[in-house]
Length: 228
Image (cartoon, rainbow, N blue to C red; front, side, top):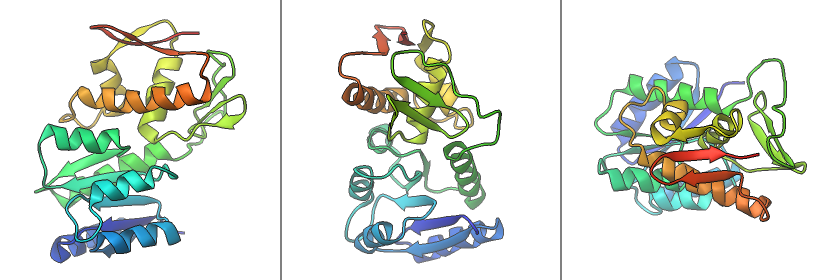
């Protein structure tokens, strides 16, 4: 079955071009131009990845993302004409996996789609589970899953990548730049502040699951460290 991509974009010509390029790469791509209709479709039949414009009639893109992240870790790429860093960071903090700024090359968007899908899906390897670096925490790289005392953490792909990078080398302090390379190695225009946005969400989820522990510690002026 083909991977399903939903393009939520109110510029019809632009949306159709994206859909054409995605279909050429073997994806089952469809488009919706209205935010309210898009939210209804996401609830009814979630795709494998969402390409989401911010400026939409009806429900705007950030509101859709905010609502989606209450219950879903569906991969989301923001497609936006808002180029200011604060707009990008708001989207990342709400749980977007990537963003592309207009004007863009449709080929670039397709490449970003492939990258996000590759990172968000289980990959075939030895199936080994990383040794639990702290009590109750297990990380499964093959399944892109992390759990605490057997209860799965609902992490976005970027949050999982951060946790995996830190937990693989407990005690080592990672700078923001090093963590940025670990989760955005092919996106050179992303600010290091994006790490703070994803880290904030990750640490919040860990704190909710294990209130008596703080496995990720911030080192002022340096970065972050994972402690056993």
